Length: 200
Image (tube, rainbow, N blue to C red; front, side, top):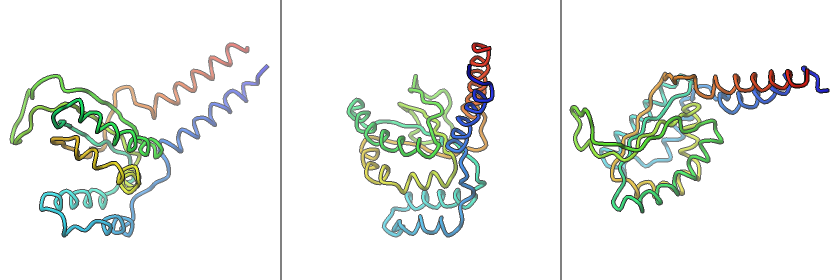
């Protein structure tokens, strides 16, 4: 007979592994880390629009609160769409693999089902093919993902696949049902209680 102590001890051990992966101990970005990342980019070689994007990313990193966040993405593919989807998948498989290793994951993904219901003050903001919410463990994990080979070696596939895209960070956020941070410990507790009941 398995001891209840072993059952609950096992459940706690699994939760500890999950906690380290999902929450981590990243902390806030230091200014020298931010400077080191942006020093790799030759901003003078970028266009005005790209420079503005990098400045926005820098400000986001400098305002780091050490917490997780979601990246809100809207995507429109280049024609032919089927070929662009295949091209983007090459990038996604590599990048999402790196993201999962650092506690990030897709939170929600949906295909566009119609035209915009509302559109105010936005030019060329119609005809989206995909919407996605991507959860990042921290801004440090985001910079690590952007610095890794999975991003640098495959990002050109994303550029070739997309006609247009919007991506902006959002935090704090709320998930109905709690998401993995609440569901995983509840599931582990349920499994432990079930095991204890079956061997009682």
